[in-house]
Length: 298
Ligand code: XIL
Image 1: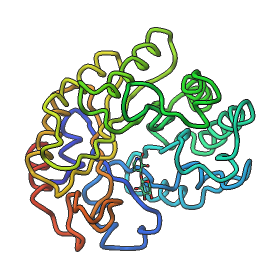
Image 2 (image 1 turned 45 degrees about the horizontal axis):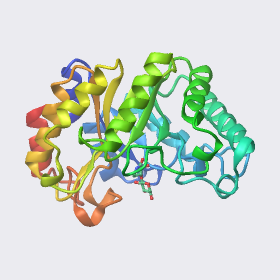
Image 3 (image 1 turned 90 degrees about the horizontal axis):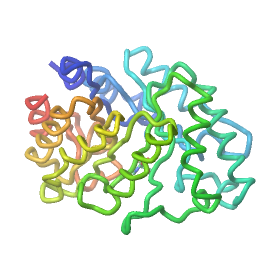
């Protein structure tokens, strides 16, 4: 069996991977991609600097390539990401105030309209919380007003009512962390006030077995209890310890609303942290012990 088939047999879950358009011509890469995974996230190709390099000039060539490959392979697509402080094009970096607010709204509307019907989940807002303290990260978007996140979600719902709208962040794995609690309060508030949000993504970039939080399952189930799906969106773990990978899978499977596990790349050589060998396949495409551990747990 495979990661995707095993996940699908678990109440229709998906097991996805980040994908880079530039690697779709590498047959060693696509062989593993199409054999093992039933969902994909473009690693960089749907980010703001990629899709709107100049204001109101939209480029979709590489993103479209990934979507076309996914459709042909029967894989679902996670759109990543529409509003983020990082990987903004130069024109946006130097914007502020109501002009930036309007530009954000236009960006979300244009990009979601282009991909309408092809994207199952969108990471509407990425990494809006500060690393410590439980409050918002300071950024040009945050400076447009504290309501920027809910405006982004409302805009997204109007642009593609069928897409599932997610908030995505990192270092939100430990239930005790102030950052986790900050995001939790936001989602709770959105649910209470009817701000559209369907899912929360936990990037889960872990730095080794010892960084795996024993309360991870509590984190996932607590968010799920708010009435959102929970997704593990960018999983990678330094040196790919089998125990930590197994625990992540077990914790997700224990939560009915944990419907997606996505690793952030296929082979170690594909990883943004390639020096740390954090993925499930070696650089030459062989299955690692962590692969077997994940498949066994699924
Ligand atoms: C990373 C990509 O993997 C790199 O190729 C790129 O240079 C920087 O961004 N959180 C996210 C992802 O939400 O978009 C980031 O991806 C990793 C951290």
